[in-house]
Length: 362
Image 1 (cartoon, rainbow, N blue to C red):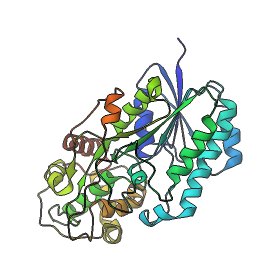
Image 2: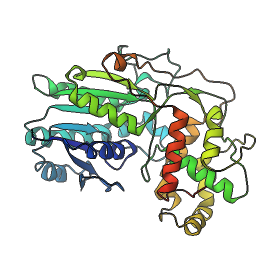
Image 3: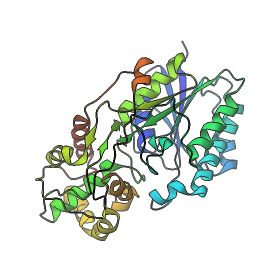
Image 4: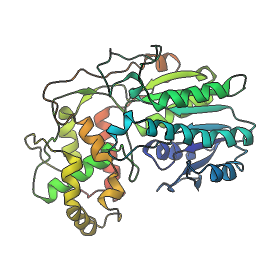
């Protein structure tokens, strides 16, 4: 039997990197990754550097990908400062243009295309704008706000009409995994924050505001969901929320994080990470040398993720916010029942980052 051939778009991000590693571990899949930066990943995959805003380059490179049968589209453009850009029309149009520049030449080249997975998130329910009813369900009407999710989804739906291939939309919660210099990587932000605190002789203080109930998803689990959707016909033209299966509050998992980083917990100390941590980049540079870490500057490792951490930690929030919980019943009913304890996930990932010499050891 010939191999299925999957194209991972956005291969250098947290999601794309995990998808590359997952599918590369499966002998029945041929794996190709596209991203502007070649990801720091291992595995049997063809990795190609491509800027999705370069339409001419996309036409040239993607014309050679006639073997592709499945696609995971995890490419993402975020504006500097992250959160403010979520309402910016330029951010939305750029993300649509990236998808279009990929899809139009791919549709011509990949005559055997079977399935296209598109990544969204819980901003689809307006969690960044207003309180939502919980648990959020995929069958609800669209939340009435501008979002590149709708632009991309409508584009894919329109191109799929009358075709043999199908699509699936995934809506994960906060994603945890490893990638360098991306705008939404909580592990890198927390790892660097903890290392700086330890270097200064301080305990691991919680820098955020009032408690909020969250859900998480391990990037490895999300990659499993991609595989499930790719090979399960019933997933065609459906939308699924994907989470670890439990809920968490940052303060409640803070002891697990402190233990993983070899630290004691201190009293809460509200801190704007995106303002304060870059001032201490020289401390991080010294830690890199002292511990023989991979030679990543703070910016190269964290990107704009301190902004994401401030948002997730609810900095400045004085009273508890309503939870933003999604239902994963639909995915379970369709056959995807994988789950992971969020505290186990955090322990795993910090240990892995230490073993990779991304952050200092215990």
